[in-house]
Length: 379
Image (cartoon, rainbow, N blue to C red):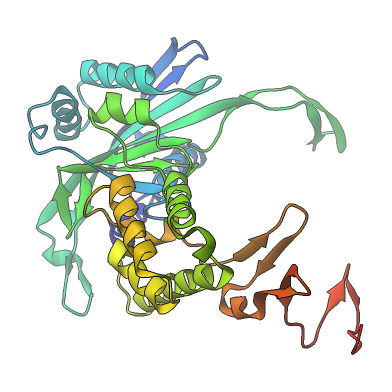
């Protein structure tokens, strides 16, 4: 799913826009035992309580596509045939009215989740009357003909609050308040089916992870019967390792700067062009950047070969997972330098009298611990 489709569905999770038929919950102990199960009609909940549940479910549709929000495709032979896909379809089509099926689903989540402490599983169904959009993106609600039925699941840790002083309005004083179990923001979750080209795509689900380093393999395997995509952090580390291993002594500051700048520029261009699909990076695109830096042909070829071996033939990696658009960092064992990516050219490396240095051009506005300092010639 692209960012535009995600935002459209995310806007559903307010009391004015929602059409949730029901919310099911399952409270699970740290031992994986069901403590309680419940079913709530959102329309009859007090406003504040309803907002709390909507906020938790909405969180599953937040974050960066390809980093926190990842498409999990089903194999063609799974659709309508595998137990996992048939259960998800049945939950969606029944609008969660079949309690027995909901119980089966909760048990599958419990079998797949690896989480310390107790947690709450929330499962909700929504029916979205998809408004018609004209070519200039004008919404025409009266012309809505399609209904997008989908389910959303959130797995939220339940944590014990610390004892503290709390204000009491009755006597205008602070008193100790008891510890209590509260529901935290989701660690993982999903939406099924995906919403693509303003319609349901039953060939995939949109998975959420709070921590981009986690791909929740057990959960994805148990709930969807498939292998999860490589996590965002693992993609970044793999890309980094391929550059280092294949370029070796040619992996200079200038080469990394060039690769980073070209990818960052392409991300910015795509954003300015209002392209909602996440930018993908292929080996041939990186080859162009390496060749522009004068990297020898044999090392460029080695990069391409290892790229395909590590990521898979024809596999493109998300640009946001291999380049940080907000920061350019240079690190040594004793020093960390963080630079605005737009001004990474201010940093260079040089060998002076046989010693290797990292140089930063400093024209004006130099401060040390908040104190403005001047740089004198010859010092």
